[in-house]
Image (cartoon, rainbow, N blue to C red; front, top):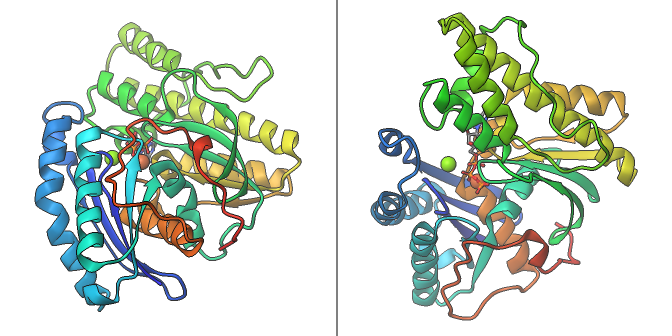
Length: 340
Ligand code: ATP
Ligand code: MG
Ligand code: FE
């Protein structure tokens, strides 16, 4: 089955062609980061307009690169939520219209299920069941995954998501938007002079709270001499606090579930310090760990094509309605009994 995947939930236009047996055939991404950088955050109206301009050319490019004429496509997967309403509408409308024109089914994909299943595009892919840590710009979730679509939330952030905490801290240190990757780069020049708190690790449970860390970073910055070295030292202390907090909670989740597999995905899973801390944890726990390749940690069309393909293979598709769900709990998804 040939599936066209379309991602437009936020500030990245992603398109991919995935084949159920041959794997990923092509994928393209256009990032709007430079456009939103001037505003210090994503401007929803500009995001929607840019998706309108970029989406169709990217679809054409993906079809050409994969040597798949439109007539060979068997289904279309599009991100229906969660995300920005206007941005979602662009992807959903284009996907639905193409599906109608080509007389094929289309399926609404949950963006976070896409992030989660991005790891399935790697070799070896994780076997079920596993514990998943989803760390992205809008979510921090610890989940028990028994099947595709069967998600039990073990813990989540009560305030800022991990990526949001990275971005806000980067912003207050004046290193641009989105600052997660830049802050991580700066941390490499840091000296270990500060120790930030590990929020909510002094009590039982698997929930997170990251908003206090940015305030801690701000206070530390204001009390410092505000040199470039101070900035790097704060970046390092911040990154280590996030990495260790995530590690403590993942350890608990593995112990609590008795599972020996950890899947880590979402934009923040591109962070090398976090990857290495979690890899050490799984080694010590005799567990396996799985990450998406770096380019599929952040938003992309490949993860949506893959997730949609699994649902289409299980005959899950929607009627002609253009589905958009800016808010959409992962626990509302229908489980697939069919394994990939
Ligand atoms: P969501 O998936 O929750 O809807 P999103 O799509 O905006 O949110 P992603 O695309 O998964 O989020 O990830 C973007 C986030 O990842 C940003 O917050 C960004 O700063 C962060 N990020 C990317 N690379 C790194 C890195 N190397 N270190 C830390 N954070 C990073
Ligand atoms: Mg993004
Ligand atoms: Fe995302």
